[in-house]
Image 1 (cartoon, rainbow, N blue to C red):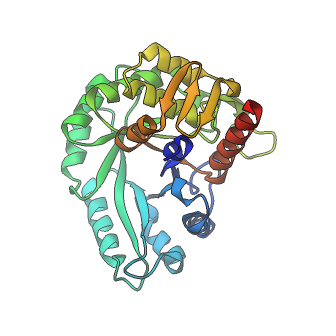
Image 2 (cartoon, helix red, strand yellow; image 1 turned 90 degrees about the vertical axis):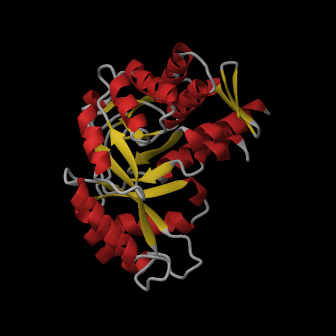
Image 3 (tube, rainbow, N blue to C red; image 1 turned 30 degrees about the horizontal axis):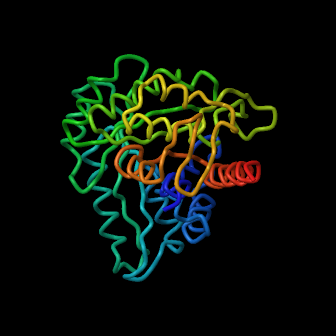
Length: 306
């Protein structure tokens, strides 16, 4: 597998329902259905939906879901409310209604995204969730994340980090993100990221799609996932921090067998291992924006090298 393909495989969980896109359900599902069949489908992850809107999803998009026992299902990630037990029952019923033999379309909820700020919350919510669902716990990263990441490891769950938002204040410090990723690496906890990662390289961008909206420094998804790969490979937190803060696109070179950043060679096999075992995905309200910008970046870098 080529290095860029390894980076992109299943990378983008589509969150079109959420800001700044905030699409209605039907248009978001039509977009997901298009991406699911499109030329960049290998980069597409799950469709993210709040538990309160699962029924709406069925009503608005049942005709769009794949059909037939051999058809690959849509995979959904559900944001669960505080009542995890009730959410679990609803999700199990959804999966029964949309099994591979269903005439109502084939889809499966297999990931649940939760929020927790204490060790006890992680334990209690995990107990209420059946083992068929993979949980991600979004935790605060402003302080010492080690106890929370350790608790996530102890219950066999995964972690989630919020890397931005629609205001400059929503973006955490780079050091906090690296501490989070390093804590996950130390505890062998896979993680996902969410928010503010529409672009491959860190830089100043508009934070919303509204004309005249605010701008701010956004992290690049490539920065985040290559920093994670470096930590996964045993590089120092200082090195990973420098990779996360890199804003010069020319510092990245792309070859079939590796991505290189300022003398650090990150091979395709390492990227694939880090992506499959550690740095899993990120949620984005746009799918086309990150995928197309990365394609443009790699084409430009290769034309410069020739």
